[in-house]
Length: 448
Image 1 (cartoon, rainbow, N blue to C red):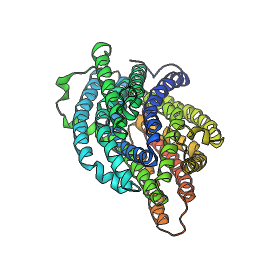
Image 2: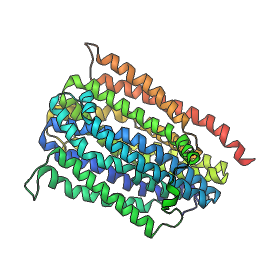
Image 3: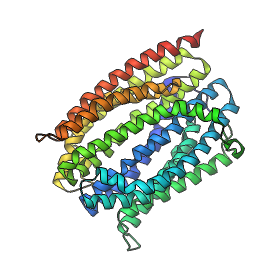
Image 4: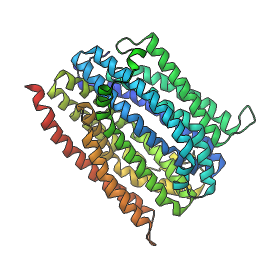
């Protein structure tokens, strides 16, 4: 356990964020690796993996319920020096993760084709996407347990083991992807099925490695099967914090699905360009997300310890750092984004769509960074309902107008991105205002 209630806040962020970033970049690389090797199969395969991968946002919404609930309650317990409560929350979350994983595996297998039919541009994309999802579903199901264990460690101020496990996972995926997708060595190419299978095998290895670490090396929070028996009061504590945060990711899923729907009229190349561009943009956003994740754990421990001013200091520090990083990456994304896309496709139309996407959506980066910071601070404070409110506001102002615009005969692809810029800025302003209200309500009593 690392005490985040003492010492320099900036030093804690600078120590934790790079390790969180390294682990997250490993996860993002899995998706980019799949796209890279699948790109040789054509636009339909690229669009399929991109559209099917969006289903990962929905699963992320569910995993965030447990992840956010765990890291918040455990960090609060650590701040109060209440090890017993930290262990109880951790093991109750693990029990919930087993249930959620089984439900995800069953429901995903049943609904994969229906989902692809709702977002795909043509039958070829439907078939390829369904195949990919079926083989990728075990990886999504196991994410629950993996993220709960990672969140427990982050709540105690420890992030290095998670980074190492994620590096192992991606390394395995990098080795298996060309073997299974393109048939390197074996001579038997599995195509999009190989992409999903490579990811699933890699995640299995990650879960096993993390499980071994907890049994051999972790002492503050420990796996205790006797504490897995469902306790309604504990589930309620976890879900009260986690459900609104999960709702935020569910809204992101809906927004992404609406974009794929709107782009469907422009063909598979448009969906493929958006799929590649959105994953690259995700990588660009990771430094700010990593700092926000670190800030959430720091704020959580200090909320538990009653250090009101230190919570405010955490917010100010990470907001300034995150804004600086996002401004730098905005400049980067404006400078020849085609260089970033060239390794994934040679199709001129797909590259043109991706370039347009990166140049326009990168203007969102500073506002998006503010949203990340506010979201993590709400998690640290133990109230994630405002996050759901701000995300819901963006859903109403973005998805509904986009559906209306896409039905018009003069609909142009640029309108998708113009609308995104306006609504993301609106969400950032709303999030900052809601956080200011939350600070006034929750932080003042801490110093009494």
